[in-house]
Image 1: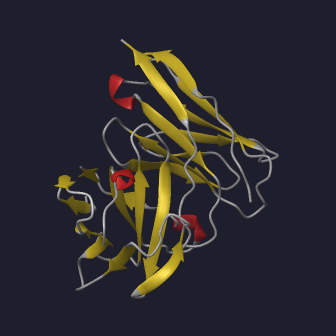
Image 2 (image 1 turned 90 degrees about the vertical axis):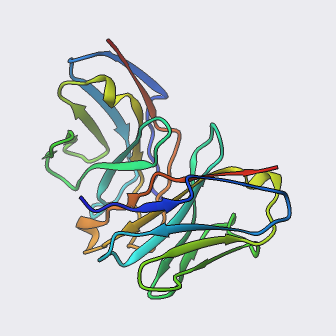
Length: 111
Length: 116
């Protein structure tokens, strides 16, 4: 099974960009990379996902390395509301598969 | 925006009692899930449900647990005889699963279960 590796925690200042890395060297060519986050006292929340090329949505951008062994979640201007645990999720098979949450990266935003 | 709703937000029960946690998934979704998160620990998958039957379940989901979709909107998790170690946040999720490119799970805010 593919696994992901993330730093335990990162700290950034408000209104600065944040780059959250994830290593997933064992994923296969057809595996999507998903990111979720969990705000304090809330359920996990989908952030973004991608396959090969870089992806953007209203929450974040996802930069995927050319060899697909790593990816970086980019928050362009972090706010205090972005303080959360960010999870890079190993690929699941189909809709029946549960998501495997690791410890994620605890993002601390300083005002 | 459609959302997954869970009730109650907090459930307190005595050890050995049965509890039912309730969820209303997003209406056009096909797959439903339960997860739990013990305080300070990782979110753990319990079970997935599709087409009115369990699709996958983890080792945690033993005979004390059951799931049901009693009508077209609700999805429930029953714990038959609660133990102290069942105290946790329980999250429901749903997924439209329109192919791997759209394999996204949407989570509810959770039910905090406290077993005394």
